[in-house]
Image (cartoon, rainbow, N blue to C red; front, side, top):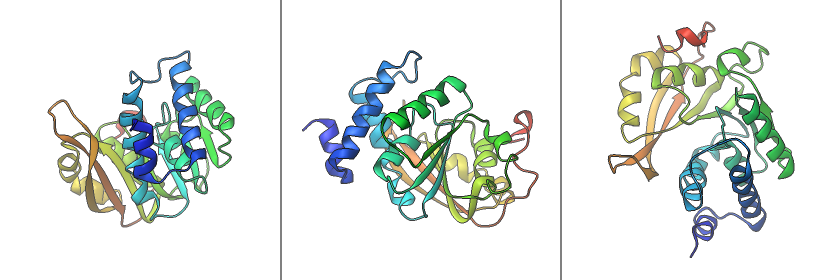
Length: 228
């Protein structure tokens, strides 16, 4: 069984979702800029499958989601394809990548996907409704742990979740920042194994941070101060 067929079976995706995933990966491989070094089965495994592992938490926490640093569309675009009734904002500071995401979402008929070509630490100040306006926020390989917590948690509503796909030491990295996380309103931490193994051969971690209390309004700070 091909990897795309295994993904469809594993996550219960219908024909339309699979056609859209094929369309996304075709667009990535055909893009004039280098969106990712992954090709072929690596795109399906490291891009699609690993993104879809976030679905159990996406399904628990409402319909309004934000993906910070969407890049080629992992995980935000993939999750929007898998759950078309959810509303996704893909935040990507690099203009050409944001344009790619916008054009691809339109081509795939993803009407509930919005793309913002903004930096996370700046965009939140543009509209008061953005602060704590999302049920869950995803961030993949955007910044170090401290900066990721400062960028992501202010966008999450109390009771929602910040989802951080990380390397094999990801859980320990977040646990080591417990005091900082609590200052930002973070609470209980969960973790699950990723399908993708790191250079050490151990599986990566999906770290899930509960939003237990409002984030003080001084956060996030300008880029030079993030995580300090």
